[in-house]
Image (cartoon, rainbow, N blue to C red; front, side):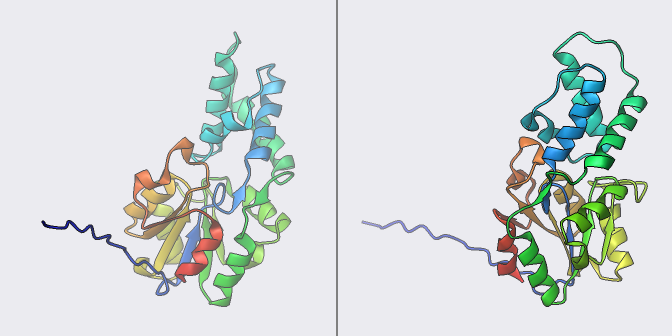
Length: 235
């Protein structure tokens, strides 16, 4: 009788040779859904449209502010009869509301501060690449007291192209004068992983983020983690 034996292949991953770690923002470092939803609903209320829940707004986050507003208006309008809304006016109303409310109930995910400190202690360069408008990044970093950890950051309007284009990641690597092979992208959505793939850069997908209600594993990041603190195990 032949005994069948199943062997498990374990892939060992570490990123100790990296020099630059690039992070997504919303859904990776911070949970901004409460404040984004607040400003979306302020805008919808202005037009007497039905407000949306946090769960309804969450899948719309990650492709930039204009797509967030457009999808929110479309979904709310489906629930009732409404007259045509001027999108530019609606976007301006949302933008002004979020400018005043961008860090009211936004919070850091568990382990973010400790892990950023750990990485800085090991002298890694840290940057942020987000599809959030640039103007909102620094106020949130300051309010949450994590600005000191980052060497550089860019938003959706910093360059002509945004994620999933590789251009933002390539720009950051060039700005920091670090070879792509020594860079790592950490994010919660397909845009982050696609951008990394397109830039020929390793990536870490976090499973706890937004990602349009999809599994981050579907996009084949180099590594998947379930909590931010797990990053420390690989550096």
